[in-house]
Amino acid sequence: MDEPLNLVLFSGTDDKLQAAAVLTAGASAIGKPVNVFLQYWALDAFRRDRIGRDHGLAPEAGTEGRAHVDDLRHAGQVSWAETLRQAKDLGEVDIQACSLSMDLLDIDQADLDPLVDGVEGVTAFYLNAGQGQVVFI
Image 1: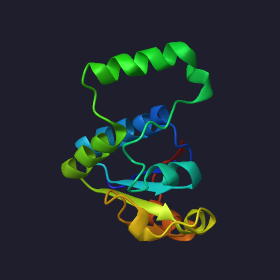
Image 2 (image 1 turned 135 degrees about the vertical axis):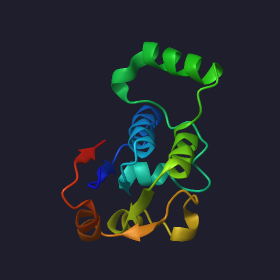
Image 3 (image 1 turned 90 degrees about the horizontal axis):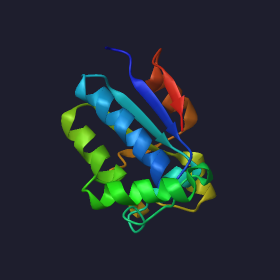
């Protein structure tokens, strides 16, 4: 279990962020380190003032998908952000913002939610990834 799971998050929709959070929590629960690299619209969703907002769903979810997600929320399913917080409590989870995306979106580190551990470039992400699997969401 030494090699980390490495997630590159590009999409900022709630369904894709929840999927990433569940993968992170599962890996963390079995002792696998996880590196999360936030780019573009996923990074935008991690802004301190936006993290609790509804970020919509991917177009393929449709109205039926929206209804299912709303039902889960009403039944008490925690948000993707809370799932990530829980994953960090379970194990080694490092969440880094992409420095290029930070520049592109004109975001300062102070604008980000405390879930984000820092800012790094893509080369640092790959160095930290080692031989671990990389998943793009």
